[in-house]
Length: 146
Length: 255
Image (cartoon, rainbow over all chains, first blue to last red):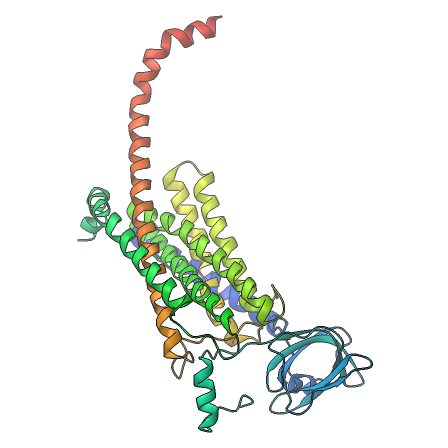
C-alpha cells in the first residue's frame, strides 16, 4: 500500500465513520427532529402529549369561526386522515386562511389545541397572480389539500 | 497532466488573466439579475412583492452548499494527492461560502417574519443551515490559528470532510422531517414548481452568484499564493537581516 493509497483509505474511513455517526444520531433523534405533529400523528398516539406541541396541517374549509366578543378564533387543522380543533386568541399571519398550511403551538385539552402561536407554512409553489387566476378560471387549480 | 494543472506558477499566470474578466462577468450578471428580480418579474400570487427576497436568498443558499462541497472535494484532493494548490483552493472557498450562508440565513429570516410570522424557528432546515455557517467559521479558524501551512491544511481538511456530512442533511432536511421551511421548488421530482417568469430571474441570479464565487476563488487563490511566496522570501532573508542587526542586539544583551 503506497502512502497515497493509505491517505485515500484514511479519508474513506473518516467520511464513512462521520456519515455512519450522523445517520445513527439522526435515526435516534427520529421524530424529535420533526418540527410538528400532524393530526394523523396525534390520532395514532395512545395518550395525548402532556406538554406544548406544534400541530401542522391545512386549515379546513369552512371551519374558521371568529368570536367578536372574546376575540377568539376557532378552526380545524386537518390532514388526509384526521382533524384537530384549534382555539386561538392573538395575531394571525398574513397567509392565514382556509386551505392554507399552518403550524399551531399549544397544549391539547380535551382534544382541542389551545394555541399560543400560529405560524403560516408556505408551500413550494411560486407563480404570478394572473397565472393563478387563469388556472382557477380554467378549473385546473390543484386542490391544495391533495 | 495533474502536475501541470496543479502547478502554482502556471495557476498564477492563468489567475492574473482570469481575474478581471470574471469580476466583470459577475458584475454584469448581477446587474441583469437584480433588474429582472426587482423590475421585470411579477409579484407572487400569495407572497406579493416579498417574493423578490427569494432571488437573493435561494442562490445564496445554493452557493453556501456548493462552496462547502467544493471545500470538501479540494480538501480530499489536497490530503490524498498532496497538492498544495488544492489546499489553497479549499482555503479560498471558505470566506465566500461563509458569506453566502450568512446571507441565506439573514434574507430567509427577513422573509420569514411577514410570511411565516416569525424570524426564526428551530426546524431541521434552519438549524442545519446555521450549523453549516458554524462549520465554515470553524474551518476558517483552523487556517487562521495554525501557523504551519502544511499542518493547517491537514487539520482543515479533516474538519471539512467530517463537516461535509451536513451538506446532504441541509439539502434533504425538508424531505426527511416535517419542517416550517418549504420543500425544494426547482430541483425536485416532477419538475420545477416555480413559474417560468420567476425561474428565469432566479437562474440569472444563480449565474451571477456562481461567477462571483469563481472571481473570488481565483482572486483569493492568487493572493494566498503571493502571500506564501512572500513568506518564503522573508524566511530566506531572515538570517541575513539577523546578521546585520547582530551588533545592536548583542549590545542589548550585554547591557
